[in-house]
Amino acid sequence: MNQSSPQPLGAGHTRYIALAQSLIDDIAAGRYPLGALLPTEHELCAQFGVSRHTVREAIRRLADLGLVTRQPGVGTRVRALRSASRYVHSSTGSGDLFQYVRDVKLFLTRQIEVIADEDLAELLECQPGQAWLKVVGERRVTGEEQPIALTQVFIVWPYRDVLKGVSAPDLPLYALIEQRYGVVVTEVRQQISAVAIDEESARVLGVEPGTAGLRVIRKYLNAAGNIMEVAVNLHPGDRFSHSMTLRLESASAAGRGA
Image (tube, rainbow, N blue to C red; front, side, top):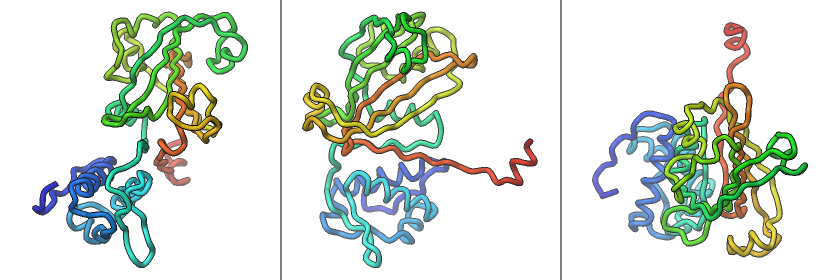
């Protein structure tokens, strides 16, 4: 961003992401040097035409990336000129999965047929002996050398040809399934758990074995409640965080809609 007055950000729940990116660009360009204070919340609200909530969410994103620190009574100070290899995934709905794919590229390394044993069948919620396509790959943020995650995706056997000729998909795999086979994902179940990274995964991720990690499992279901795809992502704990906004409906509104 240049030295001219910033333009107000457009409407929508991703305004704080746009504001965060503008501030990241300004820090990288030297407008806010190392140790400098960012403008106050009030000043950022006026400059960008956004609410204080939007400003606070944007600053929180910068803090998650390790670019700034917030000091009560002092302000927000620049602590680094570029972030570490860390991705912050913020979401308010399933559509934000597309934002994740735009930011993070999946590079496929292997595709193999697997037959679900008892342990895998439990993960995939299927009967033992069922065939699946297993896709193995790495997720990378553009410009970063180290992957932010190792990925295993299990695709139900009838959709096994969805990745023919594709090594770096530009859409989420579930979206490719929708396009090719005319089906619709109506539900996404997500589970995040803390794990210790095993030796083989640690070698690829460039961390020490036993390092704290995050295991993110997403299951994609169709209208009939059948699982179409299961994605398992393993992140080093210092390279990924997940932020989610939940909007609660008041009891009176819920009663009127019943």
